[in-house]
Length: 304
Image (cartoon, rainbow, N blue to C red):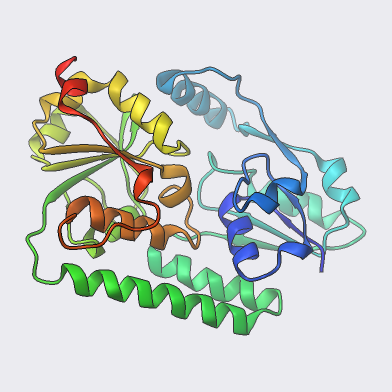
């Protein structure tokens, strides 16, 4: 089978199912695992480099309202790969090439590829799509094993935080304007032993203002700008230190959202373990990805 993945979390899932040698094309944002970066890239970003958070938000809104994508799909390169299967998404017009565009292109290809659109809104739906992709690619047994491994890790976290006090958590998915993280993030916070005071499980992320964040009285603020790694998330948090400091939370931490929270793939369970360690560091062990959470020092907040 020749597979093209048009969304990073699908690429991660395909490799996790042992299908890396059958993936012939990926997006320009598919950076995990490292082997994925050796595949042919069939998309590019149309937004200029160097934009700040507010400029990115404005550009995305402008193109979305105009019915224009923020990613460009190289239709010729895609067709030349002669895929049997294309995996894309229908969840977010900001996150990848639109499903309608992909389906229209696929209909005209000589290889007549099957198109699967992933559309998870919850952790459970994310796990369900492991089954979907495993079935479509003849990897049912590998899918069962992957699900069992993820379920065991989720159960270990739930057991570790059972009966503990649940800190009030604000998960900030963007800083200018402020977005409260939705979809699977409130569920992850709950499983990790916290209480999400802003996000709505299974609902899209929503814009809020700093007054609403403050009124929610968060004890812990997790800064997780969509698509940013830990270093860039930390830099964004420092740039917005004044409103963050005004929240008077006991802890402000920036995390690698791109790897562990923005993408609804197999690494969400890493994000769960990381969140549990952030909220209950003395109870839950440090996960392998603990370095991907960067606490803002008091001096960084005070400097605001």
